[in-house]
Image (tube, rainbow, N blue to C red; front, side, top):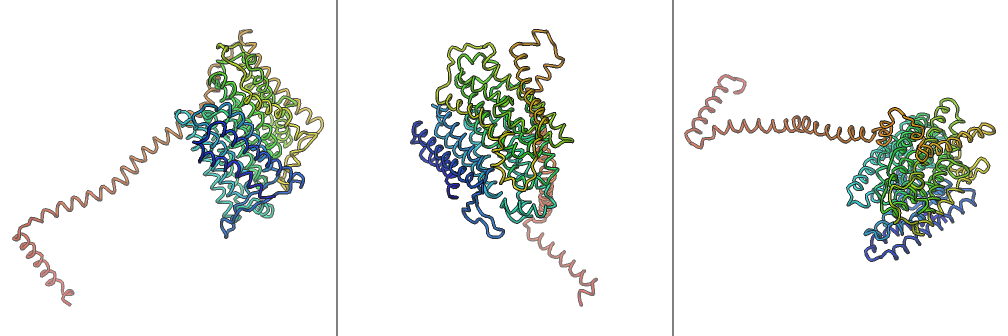
Length: 629
């Protein structure tokens, strides 16, 4: 049975390899046949494996491929439990849906087969990461995810913006990966193994003295992959890649890697108070900054990109509060409604002939009713409107934070503000695209092809019903993750009237945000009542420019580092190193020039020199008696 884990991994890898080798001989129809059937097989095996461990009460499956190193023993191994099982099913299912959408969206593209080659390699990389049995195998998946995301983000590399976006994502992730690698070195040095279970068992017995430092370095890797402050600026730029690839990155692959890793190491994380406070603080800061940034973005995909960063911030808030189940729950629900929103945006872009400015859209609900309805479901889900999926997961996060008490009351209040802002900017997003009076002629706009609308409908249904896997009345996901979180201290939800009040406030925040969006962008309440807000233009500019964080980062880390490197090159390299070496060379040159004057080439001169040196030697012997002895 364990060998099937290898099957799930190899199917997308072999598909990618086949498309690489034989891609130039394959047309669109043959490419679709290969990639879609391979994805169907992956989904079937992943559900079979998940069902198998479900019937066995989620007892983990282990598969050792080979021994990498004998002492300390490092094995290339895979591990399937409730956590990796959920991620496996999620990745395989969403990759199939997104690939089906891609067959229509990417049709007629010159690099059609290459797109699916990269796509399947991305799926393989993420599956390798989540099914890893130790930190080393996880690191391989971690790095391959970074590589494959680079290939997809810069897929249209002939565009300068796409090439720069791919480079930016790759470089910023290297910063996080450097911290992750240091954390792994510290783990190997202390535990003398990379195996998850061995490390967790040892930690429960004896906690390492430098545990906080280990966690902080691992956190740096998580912040890079999951686009958290200060390493989040690569994700909005990643929109330069094909929209279905953006849906894959934002929904079920790269950006969820950091969240998955932190939940995987929860047996370590629970003992690091510094790590938990850092996670919840930076997660909350990220959620607020990115929500503020999303409010005034004009690009249909960039609004969703900042939305992803904000929702990832909510997952980090849950992890920081010890609500690991809530974090994975929100990861799952977010995967479906975010994939729905991105693919819906892709359908709009496709029919609008690649126009992405939402202010140049409007009124599309009449031309694209199915897309409008499905994106409406996605908007309500992310806004936390019951009974859609986002309500259950976001409400559980907010309630979990509140239940911690003390300083966490402040975290809860700010998280509730971020939830309100989410509903506001997503309401604005949907209203400007589908409701506001159109600013362009829409005669050429039609509903998206069936290969696009069918995946949207499927994801819309998931966005409605997937939230019921873990509610206050049915703790399904909690049971799935029970074995993973064994001996891990988790946060429990408040009960009774407290939970009801918190749910009411959460729902109120969602409806308030949507209502404000309607009043401002459709009803135009400011114009109707002639309300003037001081510094409104400046606030809008700050929002659009993401508080100038990108400019500051570019000034310090790009221009500043270039300037510093030039100064170092001049002062240290040019004046000090080159100056010393050139100085030594000049001294030898001058001395050799002086000596060369004595080399006349005349015999009489050499006889005189010989006589003088002989005279010197005679004088030395005469006046130094010790020499004669």
